[in-house]
Image (tube, rainbow, N blue to C red; front, side, top):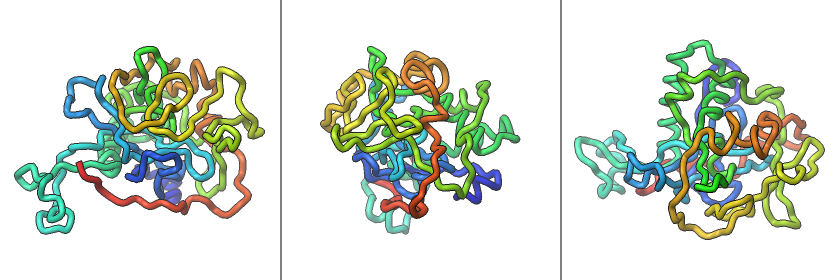
Length: 291
């Protein structure tokens, strides 16, 4: 994957279908030199984004060495797809047959295909973009899910930078690049650690110390975001949040505005990892899930 990225090929990978628990992003989606896609669903109301939600299967970060993943989320439920009618999957899921050789599919692999389509549009518009520039633009143009009061509807470890916006990513004017200071093949650690006292994940500074008040972030691994900076557990989403690109943060990633003042610092890892190479992970992508 990293060799492809280094050669100028944009790699999009699935976050995996083993969510919602923390640390469930699968290989190779745990590598910073890919664009990792999680899933959201429009809840069968494509013209009403207020009831969209992230399904429980979508893999969540952080990675084993502290990177924020997924990078973005994209449509990943009740998506029409072509499946060989004599294949194992088609035979096992005859109830999902839509007609004309099409089936209703769900999973972060579906979101990966949708995200890849957005990347294709970006490269068609700007063919000279590097993989790091594509990743930066895709994330900077994403719409984060926030509650009406402006608090996060989902953790950064579940929605990353937010829901992709293909038109904004392709046509918008964005500068900079992802993975600043990092080289494919290097061994790095991210900025998320597990706090054994608080029993949850938090972001730290370059010395691995907690961030100042107002810039800190904590997640105890629960599924539903209940406002503020803490997770309140539970697995049902009760509606009421909005996909909002610009209301919650001051341009680009929301941790580059009000709460987190250095997106590259938190998103990228600039410290060298001194153990074994870590990209192999323990979880592997498992394909589609049922609707």
